[in-house]
Image (cartoon, rainbow, N blue to C red; front, side, top):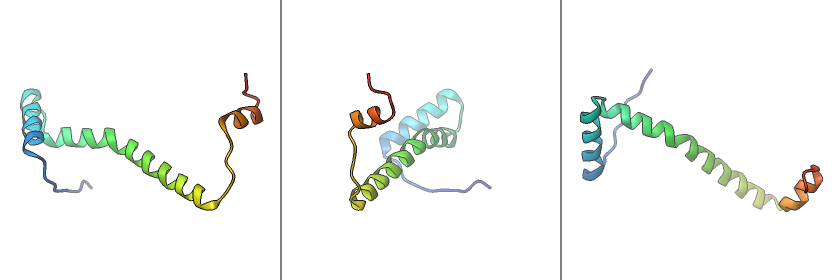
Amino acid sequence: MPQMHSFQLSDDLSARLATLSRSTKRTKSFFIREALERVIEDLEDAYLAENAYEEFIKSGAPSKSLEEVENALGLAD
């Protein structure tokens, strides 16, 4: 079931959204949903990667260079 969320936009962003909505005859909600869908996956990836990196650093495990990994996988030129 869809859920309602409430937030504030700057005057400039609100005006741009209203203009886009009027000119395309689509709702403001449509464009807000589109924007979130396009951005949220990237944000999830970035935050998950940051957390994984922090956990790796805390673990003290040794790292390998790209060259070492390529050699180990037989991908070196």
